[in-house]
Image 1: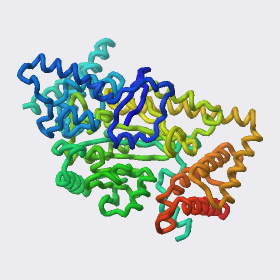
Image 2 (image 1 turned 135 degrees about the vertical axis):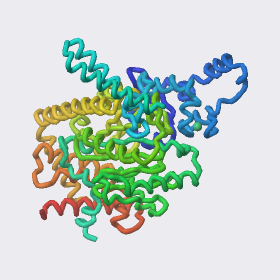
Image 3 (image 1 turned 60 degrees about the vertical axis):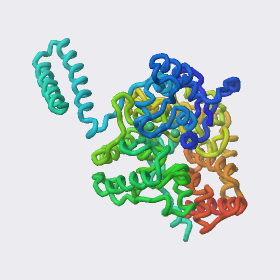
Image 4 (image 1 turned 90 degrees about the vertical axis):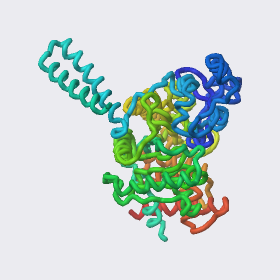
Amino acid sequence: MHFTKIINGEKTEIHLCEHCAQEKGTEFMISGTSGFAINNLLAGLFNLNSNIEQLNQNNPIQSGEIIQCDRCGMTLNQILNIGRFGCAHCYKAFQEQLNPLLRRLHGGNWKHNGKIPQRSGGVLNIRKKIDILKETLQTLVAKEEFEKAAEVRDEIRLYEKQLQEGGE
Amino acid sequence: MSIERFINQSISSWMNADGPQADIILTSRIRLARNLKDYLFPTIFTKEEADKVLKQVESVIPLLNLHPLKDAELLKMEELQPLQKQVLVEKHLISPSLADQSITGACLLSQNEEISIMINEEDHIRIQCILSGLQLQAALDLANAVDDQLEQHLDYAFNEVRGYLTSCPTNVGTGLRASVMLHLPGLVMTQQMRQLIPSINQLGLVVRGIYGEGSEALGNIFQISNQITLGKSEQDIIIDLNDVVQQIVNQERAAREAIIKTSGVQLEDKIYRSLGVLMNSRIIETKEAAQCLSDVRLGIDIGYIKNISRNILNELMILTQPGFLQLYAGGGLRPFERDVRRATMIRERLQMENNN
Ligand SMILES: [Zn+2]
Ligand SMILES: [Zn+2]
């Protein structure tokens, strides 16, 4: 399935898995895209060939090897054909190839900037809280509100202590 | 069964057209994609593993401490008749792929049908919340509450850099798809929709018709949703979508006013002709029904038609689809028979209005 999409003014044809194509349904396409025919954009996005070459140059031992997820066994080619990953570990296994793909799909973004699970993301949540408090601290200091700043600083220390305890 | 009882049993709370700006916005929908860390994605998992996923989610259901999920019902795809599944698809409560292609697929559906949690679709878990009118924030809050409850008992596939890991790279990060369904007859009639779509696309949003095939949007109903799921917070995603939707709503209102001003009589004529078709036809195809329903709904919204309730469009766009018609008829129907049934259902539904 092929879809034409414009993200940040950039025309992109996307090869989607069957399920997602169904979910997306009848999308409205912009006229004048007929000259834009890439058979498998995912492959293009992954920049498959050059990446493999690069990998092989960097790791001569891997030369000739097929890149494969060591948990689910899916190869890069299989993923490209289906348009979907086999397991959570694929995101680690194909990390190198993933950034350009994600950038194209998500308007230049490659890093998560949203919700963190409450329970399993405990440490991450604390780190995020500390980051926010540190920003608050800076603004307070800039405004010379030192009493409040001291409170915030104590709070940060408390979280940092939690982090140390939790991290051990 | 009487048509009245059939409809009452068939409608979901979000079909009631009582949400904010419900004259133009039919529904707001939030979907969160989640996977369990210990199992392969549905892309390649075995039946055995799929069973384990369902079992694990099923074991968690009694522990969910969330009022809207009280008395929620778990529907297993293997146990449903094809027609029952089709009807759920037509109501947008489950996806076609869950109905037809999933392995050990299931859906936990809340009583009011505002929350549906699909299990073993493209991802292990897909939380979906639908509310009437423009209520993205409320729908997101509800979806997050469901998500938080599930996460207390299930280990999600999550990593710091990529966020919630999904089988498709188009959903990774937040796993959030926010969408708004709009009725835009004014923008279609004034031929502005064609020009609007590319600019909406440029903002990283996707526009599509919910009903119909190819490039037409049956009933002038469009869905707008976010494309980007990674690198933006959930909050920013819905704020940006809300912003664009509000602008489209304003343009739709302006278009309606302009039509009334420049060709009020023609518009009134078109609307009443469509009402005549719906009230009198004995055979009607989906496409014609959708166009007439859209016209009549516009007539209600701008005050030409006063004795018919607004939700006939929301209801009948769904109830006149093949699955529902066959459910009402109590068996399979050939396309011609469906067109006859469709006409009957619409006439009877309008009759209900006159009785009230
Ligand atoms: Zn997909
Ligand atoms: Zn894998």
